[in-house]
Length: 307
Figure (cartoon, rainbow, N blue to C red):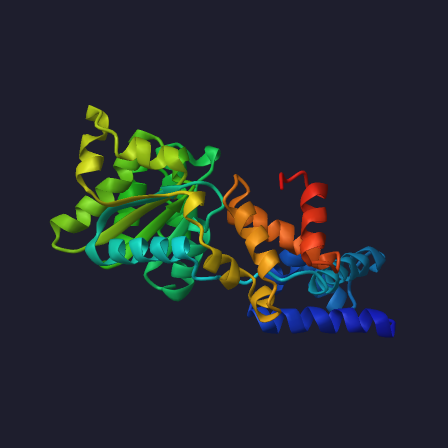
């Protein structure tokens, strides 16, 4: 019924489903088609011309195949800053209460939070805040969805549903925490207080830019309760990025004894580009098949990065 090429595409879909351990609907979402259409295609019962569906499947796997040919970033490198942020989250989980890890953009804070949750999937939750999640109810909805709490309609019922679902020894990590309002931070603090009153611990760790620590550590009256319950507060800057961090991020440079290239990337990392910008620079140079010193300098100029 289907051509060999179409049958191969369906086999790739099944393989993807097995590798990721996901449902038909979930694999359909990844590819960009409905789970129903995918089922109908597999069963030969799709009511319309199936060509558009096969094109969507082919395009998806085509992009993934091309991605394999590009530079693959290390999932996590224990750089000097990311290791410290990881430790702050760990202590926050053990001691409960509030903690703040803030600093310049692109220095490894988010990577540390992602790594911690990867290492502790059953008792840690990472939520990335954005300007649309600044109200109390919108953030409570996200927390409830993430931990599997009942999606109650009223704000107070939603709070209790979340409190019942959370457990002793958990840590909630809020990345991009500079977007949180004072009222929202107070609500998050109340979860920690709720567990403290029961002789238990719940850590709330805020990760964000410099505004985060400036606001949460403020001496203003509205921040007093928050500041009093903040057990850890640390600020990091791009100037603290070490040469050894570049080696950890790009071991291929160390293996090939490219000291000049390492020094160059280290200088870039201490500019507003930080680690994130250095990774983008190296990735582009690598894909351009020239990550020599001259290749990196040329790519930096192409990307309008001051060298």
